[in-house]
Length: 372
Image (tube, rainbow, N blue to C red; front, side, top):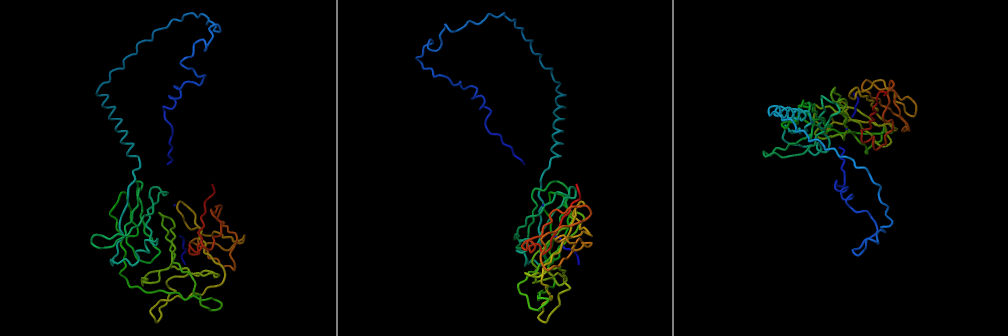
């Protein structure tokens, strides 16, 4: 079973330059002097001591400033041309953000899942082939063309210069083409087609308690998908299973769980056709707690780490396989979690809450980093 794994400072100065001038021009505080005040009232001449005599100091006359040398007009033109060329080169090196946009088109012309796609069940991402830290996710918008055709537009806004790999991924099981495009912004004529003119079936689960055989009606089923590429590393997607109009030749990786039971998982081979035309998977849930741990390390992009030891409450629960995955089943949930792989360190060794775990399809992704 394949493992399933699913990111200017503006300083403003206040005040005015004239504030200092106004302060210097303002008279200092002192006794108020009215228009009728006599000089004698201000200072008694008898109290004033004469200043001592000082020798006169001759003042030298400053020399006349020399006139600047005349500039040869041809030299001046060359200097201006040099400055303009330097400015042009500087502007060429400055980032100039651009847009990348395109459309998703349906082969059948009928978008049965348009709202589902818009709600997050399809993602379009771009990762820089020049600088891995640059990555973008597209905004999606449904639009009706003048011809009446409904399309989904995607837009990457303010993309830095460079070469990117654009990828499409979905939690559903449709076939898209192309799923990868090499893009150099700006670009506005990209098209990706949904090939939805295929025979479809209806899927269903029949869930029971593995010990008593009693049916379990209140359960959750998720579709999980993992994509591993050299450019993007590991992309993990999880979302509720779409049971209607499932393509007959599609594949599915599912996980199903209920309160008080450990999760179960499987694929499209678990569904068998019944007399009513549905394809049903029989699922028997064991009471207890369970989780799939997936351990990843960045080198330079995220990669599964094989042989990592997962410790629960201080005890080794097992080692990850070649896909970095380990399924664990226990009677109760652990209180502590740790991972050992070489001398690397796990970034967030915490046991997820039931709510967070459910949102992730009962899969905990653990990221590790090498020592500093």
